[in-house]
Length: 102
Image (cartoon, rainbow, N blue to C red; front, side, top):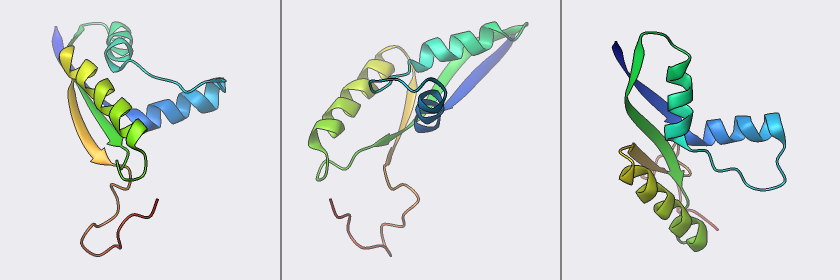
């Protein structure tokens, strides 16, 4: 068996699912279930690891969203997923760009 790591860009996956299914409520994707589904379609592969890249709201702008995201990340980590957190404006250079305005 070929051991396989799945990398998930959480916001891209959610945005794609929302475009495809147009849900009436906010979606929450389970990266472990998604990874298992992907690997099950690839003969000779086994799931070795899941790594999720997840934006996190600025607590100065969205304290509730910040807390909810931290809880979500802890649930994922509890199931063995590696989570790489990044700010919502991760492409912004914090040294040269002005402070975030909410």
